[in-house]
Length: 475
Image (tube, rainbow, N blue to C red; front, side, top):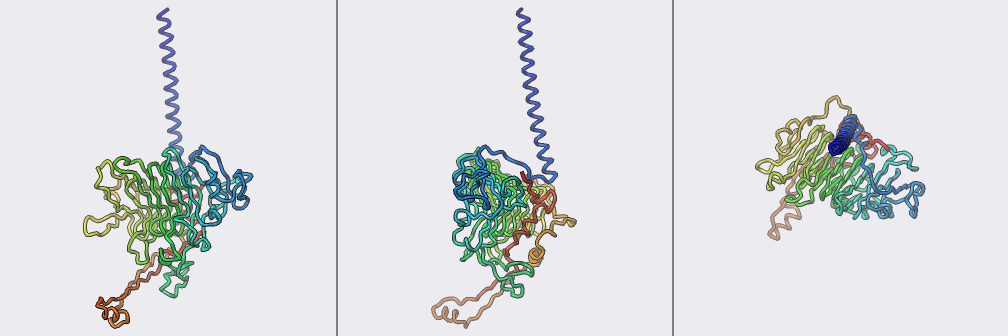
Protein backbone atom coordinates (compact mmCIF):
# COMPACT_ATOMS: atom_id res chain seq x y z
CA UNK A 1 0.00 0.00 0.00
CA UNK A 2 2.83 2.31 0.85
CA UNK A 3 4.55 1.63 -2.49
CA UNK A 4 1.28 2.27 -4.30
CA UNK A 5 0.84 5.69 -2.57
CA UNK A 6 4.42 6.60 -3.40
CA UNK A 7 3.83 5.66 -7.04
CA UNK A 8 0.71 7.80 -7.18
CA UNK A 9 2.53 10.69 -5.52
CA UNK A 10 5.38 10.45 -8.01
CA UNK A 11 2.94 10.30 -10.90
CA UNK A 12 1.14 13.42 -9.63
CA UNK A 13 4.42 15.29 -9.21
CA UNK A 14 5.53 14.34 -12.73
CA UNK A 15 2.14 15.38 -14.10
CA UNK A 16 2.30 18.78 -12.37
CA UNK A 17 5.89 19.26 -13.51
CA UNK A 18 4.78 18.44 -17.03
CA UNK A 19 2.03 21.02 -16.90
CA UNK A 20 4.45 23.61 -15.52
CA UNK A 21 6.98 22.78 -18.19
CA UNK A 22 4.29 22.95 -20.85
CA UNK A 23 3.17 26.32 -19.50
CA UNK A 24 6.73 27.61 -19.52
CA UNK A 25 7.21 26.41 -23.08
CA UNK A 26 3.91 27.96 -24.05
CA UNK A 27 4.88 31.27 -22.46
CA UNK A 28 8.23 31.14 -24.19
CA UNK A 29 6.62 30.40 -27.56
CA UNK A 30 4.10 33.19 -27.01
CA UNK A 31 6.89 35.66 -26.24
CA UNK A 32 8.85 34.45 -29.24
CA UNK A 33 5.79 34.79 -31.46
CA UNK A 34 5.21 38.33 -30.18
CA UNK A 35 8.83 39.27 -30.83
CA UNK A 36 8.77 37.86 -34.36
CA UNK A 37 5.48 39.63 -35.06
CA UNK A 38 6.89 42.97 -33.90
CA UNK A 39 10.05 42.51 -35.94
CA UNK A 40 7.98 41.53 -38.99
CA UNK A 41 5.83 44.61 -38.60
CA UNK A 42 8.90 46.81 -38.35
CA UNK A 43 10.59 45.21 -41.34
CA UNK A 44 7.42 45.76 -43.35
CA UNK A 45 7.39 49.44 -42.49
CA UNK A 46 4.55 49.12 -39.98
CA UNK A 47 6.55 50.44 -37.07
CA UNK A 48 3.80 52.91 -36.20
CA UNK A 49 1.29 50.14 -35.48
CA UNK A 50 2.68 49.00 -32.13
CA UNK A 51 0.57 49.80 -29.09
CA UNK A 52 0.97 50.15 -25.36
CA UNK A 53 -2.12 49.37 -23.34
CA UNK A 54 -3.51 51.94 -20.95
CA UNK A 55 -5.08 51.10 -17.61
CA UNK A 56 -7.22 54.21 -17.27
CA UNK A 57 -10.29 55.73 -18.85
CA UNK A 58 -10.70 57.40 -22.23
CA UNK A 59 -11.60 61.09 -22.34
CA UNK A 60 -12.74 62.56 -25.66
CA UNK A 61 -11.99 66.04 -27.00
CA UNK A 62 -13.41 67.58 -30.17
CA UNK A 63 -12.95 71.15 -31.31
CA UNK A 64 -15.84 70.81 -33.75
CA UNK A 65 -18.42 68.96 -31.60
CA UNK A 66 -17.13 69.52 -28.09
CA UNK A 67 -18.41 71.72 -25.29
CA UNK A 68 -16.53 73.55 -22.56
CA UNK A 69 -18.76 72.00 -19.87
CA UNK A 70 -19.16 68.50 -21.35
CA UNK A 71 -18.21 65.31 -19.50
CA UNK A 72 -15.67 64.12 -22.06
CA UNK A 73 -17.48 61.01 -23.28
CA UNK A 74 -17.54 59.96 -26.92
CA UNK A 75 -21.09 61.31 -27.26
CA UNK A 76 -20.38 64.44 -25.21
CA UNK A 77 -16.73 65.37 -25.84
CA UNK A 78 -14.91 68.23 -24.22
CA UNK A 79 -13.58 71.10 -26.33
CA UNK A 80 -10.27 71.93 -24.67
CA UNK A 81 -7.30 69.56 -24.31
CA UNK A 82 -6.10 71.38 -21.22
CA UNK A 83 -9.40 70.96 -19.41
CA UNK A 84 -9.39 67.27 -20.30
CA UNK A 85 -5.88 66.95 -18.87
CA UNK A 86 -6.93 68.75 -15.71
CA UNK A 87 -9.86 66.36 -15.30
CA UNK A 88 -7.88 63.20 -16.07
CA UNK A 89 -6.26 60.91 -13.53
CA UNK A 90 -3.19 58.70 -13.80
CA UNK A 91 -3.43 56.24 -16.67
CA UNK A 92 -6.15 58.05 -18.61
CA UNK A 93 -5.95 58.43 -22.39
CA UNK A 94 -7.25 61.63 -23.98
CA UNK A 95 -8.47 61.03 -27.53
CA UNK A 96 -8.51 64.14 -29.69
CA UNK A 97 -10.24 64.72 -33.00
CA UNK A 98 -8.92 66.85 -35.86
CA UNK A 99 -8.46 70.58 -35.38
CA UNK A 100 -6.06 73.22 -34.08
CA UNK A 101 -5.94 73.20 -30.28
CA UNK A 102 -4.50 76.22 -28.49
CA UNK A 103 -5.03 75.51 -24.79
CA UNK A 104 -7.14 77.36 -22.25
CA UNK A 105 -8.73 80.44 -23.83
CA UNK A 106 -6.37 80.07 -26.82
CA UNK A 107 -3.26 80.95 -24.85
CA UNK A 108 -1.19 78.85 -27.26
CA UNK A 109 0.18 75.97 -25.14
CA UNK A 110 -0.81 73.08 -22.86
CA UNK A 111 0.78 71.24 -19.95
CA UNK A 112 0.69 67.91 -18.17
CA UNK A 113 1.85 68.40 -14.60
CA UNK A 114 2.04 65.93 -11.75
CA UNK A 115 0.15 63.11 -13.46
CA UNK A 116 0.60 60.37 -16.05
CA UNK A 117 -1.86 61.18 -18.82
CA UNK A 118 -1.54 60.28 -22.51
CA UNK A 119 -2.65 62.24 -25.61
CA UNK A 120 -3.80 60.57 -28.81
CA UNK A 121 -4.64 62.74 -31.81
CA UNK A 122 -5.74 61.94 -35.33
CA UNK A 123 -9.39 61.01 -34.74
CA UNK A 124 -12.30 62.06 -36.93
CA UNK A 125 -15.06 64.17 -35.42
CA UNK A 126 -17.26 61.27 -34.29
CA UNK A 127 -14.34 59.09 -33.12
CA UNK A 128 -15.12 56.20 -35.47
CA UNK A 129 -11.84 56.36 -37.38
CA UNK A 130 -8.26 57.32 -36.58
CA UNK A 131 -5.72 58.44 -39.17
CA UNK A 132 -3.20 61.08 -37.97
CA UNK A 133 -2.43 62.16 -41.56
CA UNK A 134 -6.04 62.41 -42.71
CA UNK A 135 -7.50 63.87 -39.50
CA UNK A 136 -4.73 66.18 -38.38
CA UNK A 137 -4.63 67.21 -34.74
CA UNK A 138 -2.34 70.19 -34.46
CA UNK A 139 -1.01 72.69 -31.96
CA UNK A 140 -0.24 75.56 -34.29
CA UNK A 141 -0.47 78.99 -32.65
CA UNK A 142 -0.18 82.22 -34.63
CA UNK A 143 0.77 85.85 -34.02
CA UNK A 144 -2.33 86.16 -31.85
CA UNK A 145 -0.61 83.96 -29.25
CA UNK A 146 2.62 85.96 -29.11
CA UNK A 147 3.23 86.85 -25.49
CA UNK A 148 0.98 84.16 -23.99
CA UNK A 149 2.92 81.03 -24.96
CA UNK A 150 5.01 79.60 -22.13
CA UNK A 151 8.35 77.84 -22.52
CA UNK A 152 6.92 75.33 -24.97
CA UNK A 153 3.78 74.21 -26.79
CA UNK A 154 3.56 71.09 -24.60
CA UNK A 155 5.26 71.08 -21.21
CA UNK A 156 5.28 67.84 -19.21
CA UNK A 157 6.35 67.20 -15.62
CA UNK A 158 5.68 63.76 -14.15
CA UNK A 159 8.36 62.29 -11.91
CA UNK A 160 6.54 60.44 -9.14
CA UNK A 161 6.07 56.95 -10.60
CA UNK A 162 8.69 55.07 -12.62
CA UNK A 163 6.18 52.29 -13.27
CA UNK A 164 3.73 54.54 -15.13
CA UNK A 165 3.82 55.85 -18.66
CA UNK A 166 2.91 58.81 -20.86
CA UNK A 167 2.21 58.52 -24.60
CA UNK A 168 2.13 61.47 -27.00
CA UNK A 169 0.73 60.10 -30.25
CA UNK A 170 -0.39 61.85 -33.43
CA UNK A 171 0.02 65.53 -32.51
CA UNK A 172 1.50 67.97 -35.05
CA UNK A 173 3.38 70.92 -33.53
CA UNK A 174 4.26 74.07 -35.50
CA UNK A 175 5.59 77.48 -34.47
CA UNK A 176 6.03 78.83 -37.98
CA UNK A 177 3.06 81.20 -37.74
CA UNK A 178 4.32 82.78 -34.50
CA UNK A 179 7.83 83.85 -35.46
CA UNK A 180 8.81 87.00 -37.30
CA UNK A 181 10.64 86.33 -40.56
CA UNK A 182 12.36 88.58 -43.05
CA UNK A 183 10.46 89.42 -46.22
CA UNK A 184 10.03 86.80 -48.89
CA UNK A 185 12.03 88.82 -51.39
CA UNK A 186 14.79 86.88 -53.20
CA UNK A 187 16.01 90.06 -54.92
CA UNK A 188 17.34 91.57 -51.69
CA UNK A 189 20.21 89.64 -50.08
CA UNK A 190 19.45 91.15 -46.69
CA UNK A 191 16.35 88.97 -46.37
CA UNK A 192 17.96 85.55 -46.85
CA UNK A 193 15.13 84.27 -49.00
CA UNK A 194 15.92 81.69 -51.68
CA UNK A 195 13.68 81.77 -54.74
CA UNK A 196 10.45 79.91 -54.01
CA UNK A 197 10.61 79.94 -50.18
CA UNK A 198 7.53 81.30 -48.43
CA UNK A 199 9.52 83.48 -45.98
CA UNK A 200 12.92 85.01 -45.64
CA UNK A 201 15.28 84.03 -42.82
CA UNK A 202 14.00 83.96 -39.27
CA UNK A 203 14.67 87.20 -37.42
CA UNK A 204 16.97 87.03 -34.35
CA UNK A 205 15.58 84.70 -31.69
CA UNK A 206 15.61 86.19 -28.21
CA UNK A 207 14.80 89.64 -29.54
CA UNK A 208 11.10 90.60 -29.43
CA UNK A 209 8.84 89.44 -30.88
CA UNK A 210 10.78 86.17 -31.34
CA UNK A 211 11.15 84.09 -28.18
CA UNK A 212 13.03 80.84 -27.57
CA UNK A 213 10.17 78.34 -27.54
CA UNK A 214 10.41 74.55 -27.63
CA UNK A 215 7.73 72.24 -28.93
CA UNK A 216 7.87 69.61 -26.14
CA UNK A 217 9.80 70.17 -22.92
CA UNK A 218 9.91 69.03 -19.31
CA UNK A 219 10.97 65.99 -17.31
CA UNK A 220 9.49 62.53 -16.88
CA UNK A 221 10.25 59.41 -14.83
CA UNK A 222 8.89 56.15 -16.20
CA UNK A 223 7.97 55.02 -19.69
CA UNK A 224 7.64 57.89 -22.15
CA UNK A 225 6.65 57.48 -25.80
CA UNK A 226 6.44 60.06 -28.57
CA UNK A 227 5.22 58.70 -31.91
CA UNK A 228 3.44 59.68 -35.11
CA UNK A 229 4.02 63.37 -34.40
CA UNK A 230 5.39 66.27 -36.43
CA UNK A 231 7.74 68.95 -35.07
CA UNK A 232 8.06 72.05 -37.19
CA UNK A 233 9.75 75.46 -36.98
CA UNK A 234 10.78 75.48 -33.30
CA UNK A 235 12.94 78.37 -32.14
CA UNK A 236 14.53 76.42 -29.27
CA UNK A 237 14.67 72.65 -29.89
CA UNK A 238 11.78 70.54 -31.07
CA UNK A 239 12.09 68.17 -28.09
CA UNK A 240 14.31 69.04 -25.13
CA UNK A 241 13.58 66.99 -22.02
CA UNK A 242 15.11 65.34 -18.97
CA UNK A 243 14.81 61.58 -18.43
CA UNK A 244 14.48 61.00 -14.70
CA UNK A 245 14.75 57.23 -15.01
CA UNK A 246 12.82 55.08 -17.47
CA UNK A 247 12.77 53.56 -20.94
CA UNK A 248 11.85 56.19 -23.51
CA UNK A 249 10.93 55.62 -27.14
CA UNK A 250 10.73 58.38 -29.75
CA UNK A 251 9.74 57.00 -33.13
CA UNK A 252 7.90 57.59 -36.38
CA UNK A 253 8.08 61.38 -36.15
CA UNK A 254 8.96 64.13 -38.63
CA UNK A 255 11.28 66.95 -37.52
CA UNK A 256 11.83 69.89 -39.90
CA UNK A 257 13.42 73.35 -39.61
CA UNK A 258 14.02 73.51 -35.86
CA UNK A 259 16.63 75.79 -34.27
CA UNK A 260 19.29 74.54 -31.82
CA UNK A 261 18.45 70.82 -32.16
CA UNK A 262 15.63 68.53 -33.20
CA UNK A 263 15.89 66.18 -30.21
CA UNK A 264 17.88 66.54 -26.99
CA UNK A 265 17.30 64.18 -24.06
CA UNK A 266 19.33 64.73 -20.91
CA UNK A 267 19.74 62.20 -18.12
CA UNK A 268 18.53 63.58 -14.81
CA UNK A 269 19.77 60.92 -12.37
CA UNK A 270 23.04 60.80 -10.45
CA UNK A 271 25.30 58.79 -12.73
CA UNK A 272 27.14 57.15 -9.87
CA UNK A 273 23.92 55.59 -8.58
CA UNK A 274 21.58 55.72 -11.58
CA UNK A 275 23.72 54.79 -14.56
CA UNK A 276 21.84 52.97 -17.34
CA UNK A 277 18.46 53.54 -15.70
CA UNK A 278 17.55 56.17 -18.31
CA UNK A 279 17.36 54.99 -21.91
CA UNK A 280 16.22 56.51 -25.20
CA UNK A 281 15.34 54.51 -28.31
CA UNK A 282 15.21 57.02 -31.19
CA UNK A 283 14.19 55.28 -34.40
CA UNK A 284 12.27 55.64 -37.66
CA UNK A 285 12.31 59.44 -37.51
CA UNK A 286 12.84 61.89 -40.36
CA UNK A 287 15.10 64.74 -39.23
CA UNK A 288 15.74 67.60 -41.67
CA UNK A 289 17.14 71.15 -41.55
CA UNK A 290 18.19 71.55 -37.92
CA UNK A 291 19.48 75.14 -37.73
CA UNK A 292 22.11 76.83 -35.50
CA UNK A 293 21.31 79.41 -32.86
CA UNK A 294 22.08 82.51 -34.94
CA UNK A 295 22.57 83.47 -38.57
CA UNK A 296 26.32 83.61 -37.96
CA UNK A 297 25.99 79.80 -37.65
CA UNK A 298 28.69 79.44 -35.01
CA UNK A 299 27.06 76.80 -32.78
CA UNK A 300 24.34 74.13 -32.59
CA UNK A 301 22.23 72.87 -35.47
CA UNK A 302 22.01 69.18 -34.51
CA UNK A 303 19.58 66.41 -35.39
CA UNK A 304 19.98 64.18 -32.31
CA UNK A 305 22.28 64.74 -29.31
CA UNK A 306 23.98 61.98 -27.30
CA UNK A 307 23.69 63.84 -24.01
CA UNK A 308 25.19 62.52 -20.77
CA UNK A 309 23.25 60.58 -18.17
CA UNK A 310 21.24 58.44 -20.57
CA UNK A 311 21.88 55.48 -22.89
CA UNK A 312 20.99 56.18 -26.52
CA UNK A 313 19.95 53.80 -29.29
CA UNK A 314 19.58 55.54 -32.67
CA UNK A 315 18.54 53.54 -35.73
CA UNK A 316 16.47 53.48 -38.94
CA UNK A 317 16.29 57.28 -39.11
CA UNK A 318 16.86 59.66 -42.01
CA UNK A 319 19.11 62.63 -41.15
CA UNK A 320 19.38 65.25 -43.87
CA UNK A 321 20.61 68.83 -44.19
CA UNK A 322 21.36 69.28 -40.49
CA UNK A 323 23.45 72.41 -40.46
CA UNK A 324 26.16 71.43 -37.95
CA UNK A 325 25.71 67.71 -37.42
CA UNK A 326 23.17 64.92 -37.72
CA UNK A 327 24.42 63.41 -34.43
CA UNK A 328 26.13 65.31 -31.64
CA UNK A 329 28.71 63.13 -29.88
CA UNK A 330 30.63 65.93 -28.22
CA UNK A 331 29.53 65.25 -24.64
CA UNK A 332 32.34 63.73 -22.60
CA UNK A 333 31.71 61.62 -19.50
CA UNK A 334 35.10 59.89 -19.41
CA UNK A 335 35.63 61.15 -15.85
CA UNK A 336 33.19 58.45 -14.72
CA UNK A 337 34.11 54.79 -14.19
CA UNK A 338 33.76 52.79 -17.40
CA UNK A 339 30.62 51.00 -16.20
CA UNK A 340 28.89 54.32 -15.42
CA UNK A 341 29.39 56.02 -18.78
CA UNK A 342 26.54 56.34 -21.24
CA UNK A 343 26.11 53.60 -23.85
CA UNK A 344 25.53 54.94 -27.37
CA UNK A 345 24.64 53.19 -30.60
CA UNK A 346 23.92 54.48 -34.10
CA UNK A 347 23.17 51.90 -36.79
CA UNK A 348 21.03 51.41 -39.90
CA UNK A 349 20.56 55.15 -40.47
CA UNK A 350 20.49 57.08 -43.75
CA UNK A 351 22.32 60.41 -44.11
CA UNK A 352 22.61 63.14 -46.71
CA UNK A 353 23.94 66.71 -46.92
CA UNK A 354 24.80 67.10 -43.23
CA UNK A 355 27.88 69.12 -42.35
CA UNK A 356 28.84 66.11 -40.25
CA UNK A 357 27.00 62.84 -39.83
CA UNK A 358 28.54 62.57 -36.35
CA UNK A 359 30.31 65.47 -34.65
CA UNK A 360 32.82 64.72 -31.89
CA UNK A 361 35.46 66.76 -30.10
CA UNK A 362 38.99 66.65 -31.47
CA UNK A 363 41.79 65.46 -29.21
CA UNK A 364 43.42 68.89 -29.11
CA UNK A 365 43.16 72.37 -30.51
CA UNK A 366 39.48 72.85 -29.77
CA UNK A 367 38.29 71.84 -33.23
CA UNK A 368 35.44 69.47 -34.01
CA UNK A 369 35.73 66.28 -36.03
CA UNK A 370 33.04 65.74 -38.65
CA UNK A 371 32.73 61.98 -39.10
CA UNK A 372 30.96 60.57 -42.19
CA UNK A 373 28.61 57.63 -41.68
CA UNK A 374 30.93 55.18 -43.44
CA UNK A 375 33.54 55.67 -40.69
CA UNK A 376 31.31 55.19 -37.64
CA UNK A 377 33.08 51.93 -36.82
CA UNK A 378 36.16 53.99 -35.94
CA UNK A 379 34.30 55.96 -33.27
CA UNK A 380 34.94 54.31 -29.90
CA UNK A 381 31.88 55.83 -28.21
CA UNK A 382 29.55 53.80 -30.47
CA UNK A 383 28.75 50.30 -29.20
CA UNK A 384 26.79 49.40 -32.32
CA UNK A 385 27.56 51.19 -35.58
CA UNK A 386 26.79 48.91 -38.53
CA UNK A 387 25.05 49.74 -41.81
CA UNK A 388 25.00 53.53 -41.64
CA UNK A 389 25.16 54.97 -45.13
CA UNK A 390 24.35 57.76 -47.50
CA UNK A 391 20.84 57.99 -48.87
CA UNK A 392 20.91 55.88 -52.05
CA UNK A 393 21.02 57.83 -55.31
CA UNK A 394 18.02 55.81 -56.48
CA UNK A 395 15.87 57.00 -53.58
CA UNK A 396 12.94 59.28 -54.37
CA UNK A 397 13.03 60.77 -50.86
CA UNK A 398 14.69 64.05 -51.87
CA UNK A 399 11.93 64.64 -54.41
CA UNK A 400 9.40 64.86 -51.57
CA UNK A 401 11.29 67.67 -49.82
CA UNK A 402 10.24 71.23 -50.67
CA UNK A 403 12.47 71.72 -53.71
CA UNK A 404 12.96 75.47 -53.26
CA UNK A 405 13.96 74.93 -49.63
CA UNK A 406 16.35 72.10 -50.52
CA UNK A 407 17.93 74.07 -53.36
CA UNK A 408 18.39 77.07 -51.08
CA UNK A 409 20.13 74.91 -48.48
CA UNK A 410 22.37 73.29 -51.08
CA UNK A 411 23.63 76.73 -52.14
CA UNK A 412 23.76 78.24 -48.63
CA UNK A 413 26.26 81.07 -48.22
CA UNK A 414 27.39 83.04 -45.19
CA UNK A 415 28.90 86.41 -46.07
CA UNK A 416 30.71 88.62 -43.54
CA UNK A 417 31.90 92.12 -44.38
CA UNK A 418 33.99 94.37 -42.17
CA UNK A 419 34.57 98.10 -42.35
CA UNK A 420 36.70 100.58 -40.43
CA UNK A 421 36.33 104.33 -40.57
CA UNK A 422 38.70 106.08 -38.13
CA UNK A 423 36.93 109.40 -38.73
CA UNK A 424 33.37 108.20 -38.11
CA UNK A 425 31.42 110.14 -35.51
CA UNK A 426 31.49 107.17 -33.14
CA UNK A 427 35.26 106.71 -33.43
CA UNK A 428 35.97 110.44 -33.00
CA UNK A 429 33.91 110.32 -29.82
CA UNK A 430 35.86 107.27 -28.60
CA UNK A 431 39.15 108.98 -29.38
CA UNK A 432 38.15 112.07 -27.45
CA UNK A 433 37.41 109.94 -24.40
CA UNK A 434 40.54 107.79 -24.63
CA UNK A 435 38.73 104.75 -25.97
CA UNK A 436 39.88 102.41 -28.71
CA UNK A 437 38.45 102.96 -32.15
CA UNK A 438 36.29 100.16 -33.58
CA UNK A 439 35.22 98.74 -36.88
CA UNK A 440 31.90 97.17 -37.80
CA UNK A 441 31.04 93.70 -39.01
CA UNK A 442 27.97 92.63 -40.95
CA UNK A 443 26.91 89.04 -41.58
CA UNK A 444 24.44 88.14 -44.27
CA UNK A 445 23.18 84.67 -45.09
CA UNK A 446 21.39 83.37 -48.13
CA UNK A 447 19.13 81.30 -45.85
CA UNK A 448 18.61 80.67 -42.13
CA UNK A 449 15.70 79.09 -40.28
CA UNK A 450 13.17 79.97 -42.98
CA UNK A 451 9.68 78.70 -42.29
CA UNK A 452 8.96 75.26 -43.71
CA UNK A 453 5.46 74.77 -45.07
CA UNK A 454 3.20 72.65 -42.85
CA UNK A 455 1.44 70.72 -45.62
CA UNK A 456 4.73 69.92 -47.37
CA UNK A 457 6.17 68.58 -44.12
CA UNK A 458 3.22 66.20 -43.73
CA UNK A 459 4.18 64.63 -47.07
CA UNK A 460 7.43 63.35 -45.54
CA UNK A 461 5.60 60.56 -43.71
CA UNK A 462 6.14 57.35 -45.66
CA UNK A 463 8.53 58.94 -48.17
CA UNK A 464 11.22 56.24 -47.75
CA UNK A 465 10.03 52.67 -47.05
CA UNK A 466 11.64 51.22 -43.93
CA UNK A 467 13.56 54.39 -42.96
CA UNK A 468 12.45 57.59 -41.37
CA UNK A 469 8.82 58.24 -40.44
CA UNK A 470 6.39 55.77 -41.99
CA UNK A 471 2.70 56.39 -42.64
CA UNK A 472 0.94 56.22 -39.25
CA UNK A 473 -1.54 53.38 -38.98
CA UNK A 474 -4.90 54.26 -37.46
CA UNK A 475 -6.79 52.27 -34.85
